[in-house]
Length: 155
Length: 268
Image 1: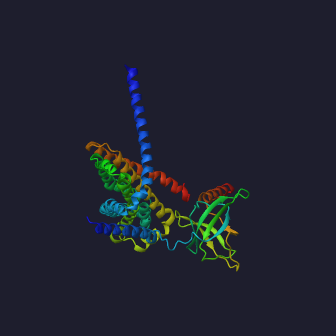
Image 2: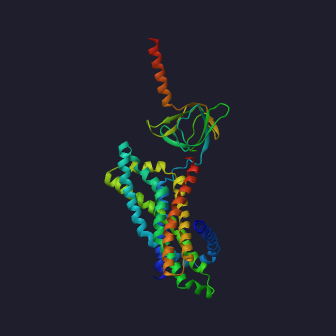
Image 3: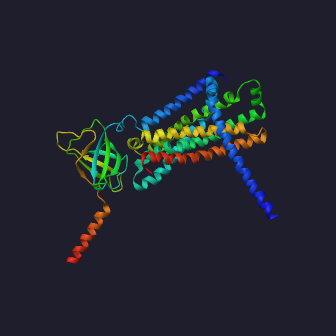
């Protein structure tokens, strides 16, 4: 095998391999549109976050606008402080409501952002004041059963 | 004599332990020697290009064909389970994540070990058995720089490229079966995949894995060849040790790397 043939094949091989990495990054990993990593940080306090996990999406009107970056417990208030990164092209007003939702019964847990009408926008490092905690199904059921039992007892 | 039988047994265990520790130490020193001789070896880049040709280009057929078939089978089996839960649109996620994170690097690594690693061991072992390595030393040519380093780097460079090609062909195979054959909507196949697969956490980690596997396989292959007993039998058992050893090392390293990578994104 002479030199230039080997060079040609190695060139084809390396080009194919780099092409495959490019394909994986752009077509599979969607590198171009996931710019949510750089963005501004917003905090919100919830009394219960249910099954919220790191890297869960933050959605406004169903559109992914950011991701959950950090979850911690406030030792004074015993509330969960969720920090998420939001794409800088989207601005939210001060009176935005953050709620923890589940898509479908078994679907993924995400943070829903419902924009308000305030003219002031949340800055980097700001906090969303109005929040709505996760609905814990077990609590709902036990409450329902408890109410039912009380009604029966009252008769 | 039960006492002397016991002592013999213990002695055998002791000798075995001592020998394997000494071999491990030799392998570590050999690795450092390969690295320090690499600049001299890489200066003659044509030698490394030749090894990329033998390790990478000639492995293309087996990697591409296996990638395609693994992807197609994964799509069929995944669809069978997912459609029971009405989630057949998630097929793209299942296939892409399993290929990019695990199957791509691991299966490509196993194939690479048996296709290219064994060839490297046999070649270096035979060079040693026919005293070509000693002859080079006589001519003041360093066999580590001339023979070992190019083969080592050829393997290290080829492996991530092969793993990426394996994953790509696998996803293409899944597309053929899922979208063309079964009839899942192409938009949801790609869209769901893109919304879940993360560049840093999935694709970069997959490339890191394949690079580590390339290093492991190449190091074991050149070491076993260099360390082979200079006989026909020695070369054949060294080749077997390369394939078995590097396959086990890939699987063990994969577990360790996966644990660390899951720690990194907060799954564990």
